[in-house]
Image 1: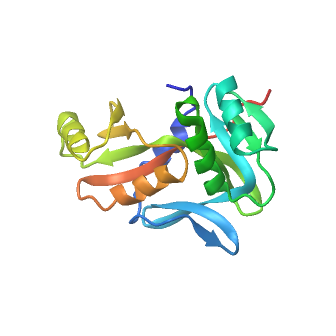
Image 2 (image 1 turned 45 degrees about the vertical axis):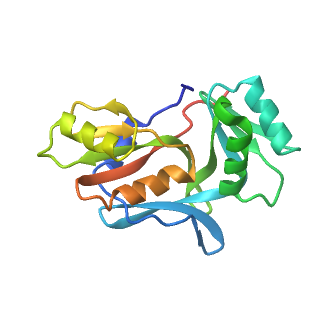
Image 3 (image 1 turned 90 degrees about the vertical axis):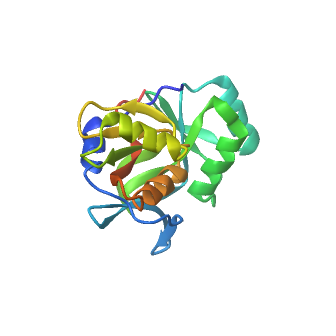
Length: 201
């Protein structure tokens, strides 16, 4: 599995809340956004036009796939476990990320580059995976059985809070899964796993 950086403190904070029903990426005053819900409040991240995050080891095969799918794409920044690509002007972030993911196959995961504010803020990406909290009166085994019966793959069990990390594609689909899961009765919290740059080289 490609290396990814988890943000434990942020993830723990997100897991105290839930998400609303599945909704597509939307436009907020002309800016593409991705969202879910925390404690009934909408949490919005803003898509950076023309920027896509490649999550993984930065293989030559992934780079070849990117350049083939998006001629003119260039690496704008390198981080531990990720590269940020600049794609041709006018590209919508979520669509470009999806196109690159299809082109690269299993070589890498892709997410639109996201920010916490429409005019800047911290950079983030949806790394793939959703952190799910289930009802407290269920055992870990009951939780795992329910998730697997619903068709989810459990990647990790946590020793506290009846929490699990389930597998999803990177990018907007992770937020969609989180929004959908909140509608399920045993789920008390669901949030997409986030990547955030920690180091530039």
